[in-house]
Amino acid sequence: MTPAGATAGAARLAELIRERAPVVALTGAGISVPSGIPDFRSPQTGLWANVDPMEVAHVDAFRLDPERFWAFYGQRFATLRGKRPNGAHDALVQLERRGLLAGVVTQNIDGLHAAAGTRELIEVHGSVATSSCLDCGSRYELDVVRGRLESAADGVPRCDCGDPLKPGVVLFGEFLPEHALARAQALAAAAGLLLCIGSSLEVHPVAQLPEITLRAGGAVAIVTRSATPYDADAELKLTGDVEAELQAVVAALGA
Image 1 (tube, rainbow, N blue to C red):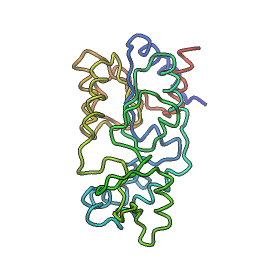
Image 2 (image 1 turned 90 degrees about the horizontal axis):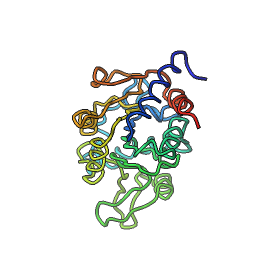
Image 3 (image 1 turned 60 degrees about the horizontal axis):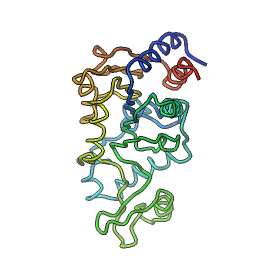
């Protein structure tokens, strides 16, 4: 069901997508909430509601206390188990297949864009799809890491060499991969429309992408319930259910 008020906004966003190609999507945690994955900052339910991220998700925490780190990240892995892309992910795939979407830049590490079939995908914060050993460089797929996590007496999945494995995500205290950030910035600069979905647009350096688009003469549209620093600069902001809004946009664009 499309929520009240979504139709007019979706029709306007569809017009912007037609008029402002190429379109680039920037997605945050909000796009995965309909898939059953909690966001970060919602009171009580957000991932950071009851823990200090600097104590459990910082690279120093991984190095100094891998047991505590994996006590948290093991729960994160469990939260992501069995989760599937939702209609919002599928809507972006449809836009890409129609030649209307040049790429998706995501802050998410859940792998749902890839699972949905997005081809031009930049995961600027990495992904849980693999974990690696910082000592010998060995890399392991998610299912292997989960198996080692579940069988480890101390709760720490380890490399064959014995060192703790680190998830392939960008932790606090780490820099974003240079190639991913450069590609994201290039897409933002070339975008006629940067479509920001489910992101607070507060986490840097990704939060600078809308400014890059605006300075290059492109427009910004936002689909998220929370306030963002770019609300006043946006050509359009939709605050309804992200899945329903994007599905309505695809419907408004027609076959």
